[in-house]
Image 1 (cartoon, rainbow, N blue to C red):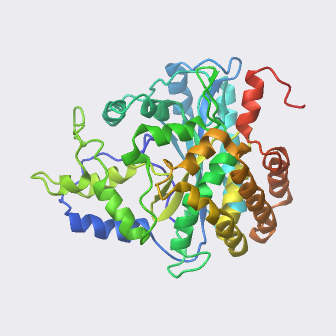
Image 2 (image 1 turned 30 degrees about the horizontal axis):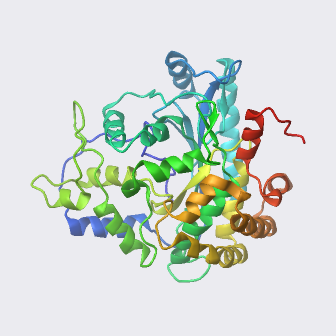
Image 3 (image 1 turned 180 degrees about the vertical axis):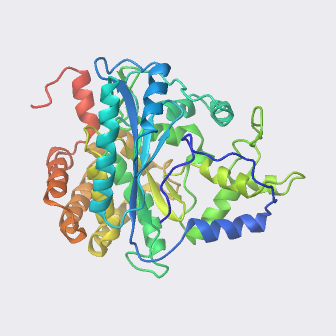
Amino acid sequence: MESQEDPDMSDSVSDCTEPRSAVTEADVEALVRGICFKTGPPRTLGVELEWIVHELRRPQLPVAPERLDAAYAALRTVPLRSALTVEPGGQLELSSAPAASLMECIGSVSADLDAVRALLREAGLGLRGYGHDPWSPPTRYLHEPRYDAMESYLDRAGPEGRAMMCSSASVQVCLDAGHEEPGPLGHGRRWWLAHHLGAVLVAAFAHSPMAHGRATGWRSTRQYLWAAMDPGRSSAPPLDGDPRRTWARHVLDAPVMCIRADSGPWQVPEAMSFREWTRSGTPPDRGDLDYHVSTLFPPVRPRGYLELRMIDAQPGDDGWIVPLAVTAALFDDPEAAEIAYRTVKPLAEHGRSLPAPCNPLWIEAARQGLADPELHEAAVICFAAAAEALPRLGATAEVQNAVAEFTDRYVARGRCPADDLLLQLHGKDLRT
């Protein structure tokens, strides 16, 4: 697995000043096939954590841009193992280095978060794990040509894209693609599993039921935004063929969001696929291809490893550890992976052969969470399998207890973290 740094939204995207060498349609297929699915035994693990930055004294108020400027300038002087980047709305992201084990990943990121929180605390700021900002409207913090172009493109389809850019946050788990050969840890099985188990993860970890201080009607408003904003960009490819071939076709047929420029505004084309661009008189180069792939937002993105993008940011300082541990167990432990595969296989019928996240299964997961009976039943079985697998992955008693407590509080009761926020909204005591 390579670096987990995510270039699609963060301020880490390289510029376009490298020498140009046009890529053809055949080049794109070869590059995508060779780069996006690098197979081998699952050995490494990563996580990308996005956070809403808030005022410690009045967390419902947005942080002034000048305060964010000062805090982020100070944070860039702190030595971290994780890559620190900033999202368009000012959300903070930490992307771990590839780790050789679950506990190495948790230990490294936890240490980085301690350092980040300590510095932010001195500035009167803190981090909150919401899948979508419950109170503040989407406001762009970063003003650069790529974000101007992105906003212009996404606004064509409606307000969902701007909200996704500026108000959402997630826990993204990064897993090796898996063996070339078939089996529970084979890349074909893991690709399929990610798209069906993904709905269970959406439901279990939904934590974004509010926007503008009101309930939205969705347990995961963040997932709703991804499904609604631009299906050609946020949908998965078909799962009925070789993953490399279907992903390469998806990349070629996806609309181009913007064309980079060395200076001045970036062009936002009208309804041009990347395939059409390669056939034009001014074809793209390799840098354009890399950037295009980074502007595709499917729930599972192959980047040499599998980037699972469907989990909302979680409550509490250490809430992110539970989805990381559960996901790692269900993919990297062969016994748990086999149980998860058998458990979610019947759910595939409810997707009606439509791509995630725009099929009925994923929509129900985002709307109902674990209140949906079938998703609840699947989550109970999968979390039990993960709990049995965690000792085999070397998880400490503390991590195992965190998963057990989450299971007791939410999964066993058909609840998710979003339900706590809804109770708070209506003034209910969460202890009852």
